[in-house]
Image (cartoon, rainbow, N blue to C red):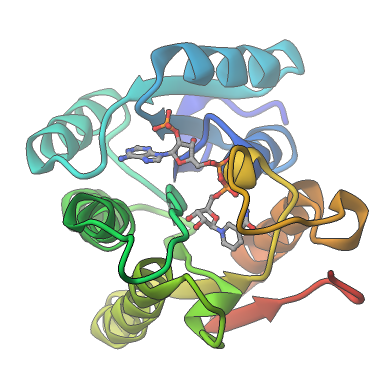
Length: 244
Ligand SMILES: NC(=O)c1ccc[n+]([C@@H]2O[C@H](COP(=O)([O-])OP(=O)(O)OC[C@H]3O[C@@H](n4cnc5c(N)ncnc54)[C@H](OP(=O)(O)O)[C@@H]3O)[C@@H](O)[C@H]2O)c1
């Protein structure tokens, strides 16, 4: 987009090595002209995603970290502060799903989902917010919850759905807290998406063409982030027209 680094919005996308996070990172770098920081645990998946984006002319950086670690999130914020001094967009997207009957679900699995999606959203937000409040231009946090964070009547999803409802509650309170600081907060609530999320998972069988496409959703996220003025999309639920 012909801007130098100082003029580009800085976007941080968690879970950007795969699925919808990767497509959001891509559209923010390529169409939004953002300097996009891709975050996830796997260095290899991250650098492949970053290479794909930079190969198309987008500016990005990969940062391998576990969003469940406060130490790692504090270090990441410090590194971003040193390099760029600001964050304009924070996309709390990383997530994980394990779908089992309640009796088969173990505490470690319950904790993994809550720590990744609820604690992770809290830690990223807490440590990056100081870099957002005084940033010039866009200031927007998007939390990728789920349609199942609105409508949880799905069997074998107790841990996942409770974490997704928690993310929605987190976003609702955060929005009220940040209004006067001019930071917008959106809770995104998509139904099933065609991503590697369901790989190896036999509870769900989806026809890829009948569920949501992660590229279409990335376009919707882009639109939400770039609406002008004081308009904020507080929540957006998205479903495919004829899902299976
Ligand atoms: N797919 C769906 O049907 C669907 C529907 C509604 C909402 N969602 C939500 O959309 C989000 C993205 O899911 P997706 O479908 O794109 O799944 P995906 O392709 O499996 O991507 C998940 C991403 O999260 C990262 N991640 C997981 N744990 C992490 C951790 N502790 N720290 C940092 N990164 C971590 C993964 O990378 P590493 O493994 O390398 O860390 C990966 O990049 C999730 O929050 C999911 O709940 C998905």
